[in-house]
Each structure stands twice: as structure tokens, then as C-alpha cells.
Length: 287
Image (cartoon, rainbow, N blue to C red; front, side, top):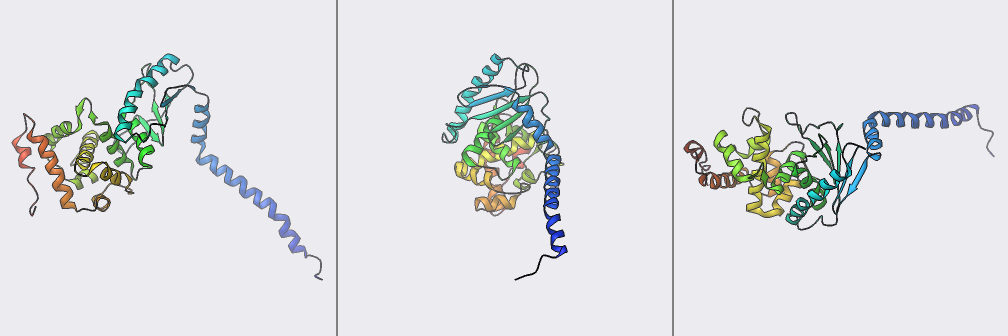
């Protein structure tokens, strides 16, 4: 038989539970510190008023909008949902998008240069509410539906371009025609410049977003939606040519060749196409 436990073993057992409790409390405090804003947001959103339609749940702070205005906003977006979902093979027909309109919503930074008036997390869209008539870009709905149809994106910038492609409209103009006007103004930008975007080459975030959506449109035209889905899913910290060529199983030269061909077809159809822009559209050597 073993002898009685030593004083040391009793001490170790005595400190075990208090130490575990201290560690647990410390972890909880650290979690509260890091997730404080998320917790406050969760409480705030749980107190909001809401309305629903076939494919939308709309929330906003009590009194920020009338129930009628919220209902009009929800039902008014149903045709957009239907049009976008049709392009994705009706993958989201049984889904519901949650739109949270909040005057206190902090506009998130999409990157270091461009703030967006909304943020998309899965099928939840958070947007800033300004005034009695809510405004929300169609690309927000498109990005949420892409999550339903294709899962989580590999890069937020590429996801935004794909969402803009899915919408197919740029301030009332078809994406290709609008991009051709930028092409005339800036000259042709190869795929590497478009993806990596040195500020000296494409200074305007809007110009880059439009050209990005046009490039996705070109990918869709040559390779169909499956090719776009490969790009959408490609994981990368920042968009780059290497990731794109790997996702599509192609080369940089081929990426540039198809991009130039596609843009030239739009420039050639423009009544005011500048000769200078046409000269910059010459194909790479060896094609």
C-alpha cells in the first residue's frame, strides 16, 4: 500500500482549480475585448424592427423607417433577386437575404483607397441608412447570392468584381461599353496592371472596379460561368496573375491576348474610338 499523499501533492491539487478558473476568466475577458464591437452590434440588431418578403428580411432601428417604407424596399428588390438568381441557375431560389439598414453603420474600407457603403457577410448585408429612402447597390445582393451559389470567395476584391459582372450594369451602361470609355481615356491596361494596380496606372478605384468587372465579363464570355467560378474561389491575399493563371490553367500571355481581343471589340464599335487607344491595343508578339 502506498503511503499518505505528501504536502506538495495536496498543494498542487489545491492550486489546480483556482488556476483553471483564473485562466478561464482571463480568456473570457480577452474574448470580450476583441469581440466587444461584435457583441454590441448583436445586441443593437436584436432590438431592431423588421419586415420580410419572399427573399428578404429587412431590419433597421425602431423609428428610423416606417414599416411601409421597409416593406416597399423589400418588395422592390424582389425583381433584382430573381434576375440575379436566374444567372446563377436559380441556386438561391429558396434562400433569404438579410439586409440591415443602420444610420450608425460605419462605412467599411474595401481597401486602402475606396470605402463601400455596405458590407456582406454570407447572406447578411449591412449598409448605412441615410434618409427616408434606403439606397443599396445591386452588387451587394449579387455578392450575397454568390455566397449561396458558389460558397465563400477566395478574395474580397475579386468577389466584388464578380458581383459587378453578375449585375452587368455600371450606372446605367453595359459594363463592356462603360469599360471601353475608360480604356479610351487611360489606354489599355494589361491583366497584371489591372490585378496588382499600381496607383500611378489606375488612380481611380471606380475605374479599377469597372475594368475588373469587364475583365470578369471577358472570362465569362470565353470560358463561361465555370471559369468565373474558378477565379471566384481562388484563394489569395491579393489578386495576382500567378493565381489567375493557375486557377484557369492558362498562361499570362493568353490572359492578356483574350483581354485585348475582348476590349478591342468594344472599342471598334464605339463611334468616337480614339486612334491612340486602337494603337495601344496591338497584340503581343508571337500570337
